[in-house]
Image: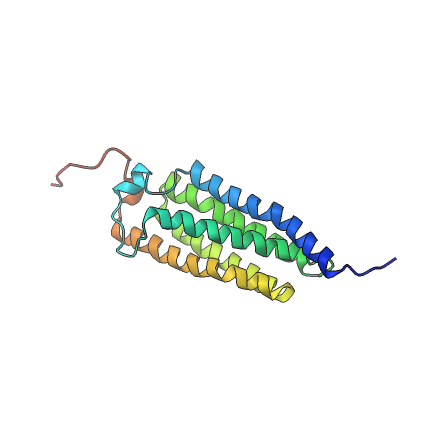
Length: 184
């Protein structure tokens, strides 16, 4: 018996998937940031010289919330594309790029590895771009939902690079112990 699902059934299946994927992606993103103590409340980050283009702290939370919601919706669309031969590859690519994304906050804010975090953003961008391209072959709208994320990754890379440039000693700074020594 091979019946075709109605539009209502397909929409219902997409909604059910989105009710799982959106909160899951959002929760993982928030958890990564919280565990790494990311943001302006981080003592080490507060000590750094910030570039002029650095947005206020609330903007990061708002941006990442929207980006994670869009990613969760895009993933739900791909999961809903049952029978598509690229579906498995697309989901694998999505998981890889998300795992790399979730590693950035601990690397930057937790381990203070500014240069390594910049390289990681490059890897995240490449994985997210590959994900977006495969998503586009399955569901073009899912690829469109990934575009703001790709744009934000470019902006984040620029900020990360500026922080690296403005703070060449960032990886050696110890929170709460700003250097007051005079060089001889």
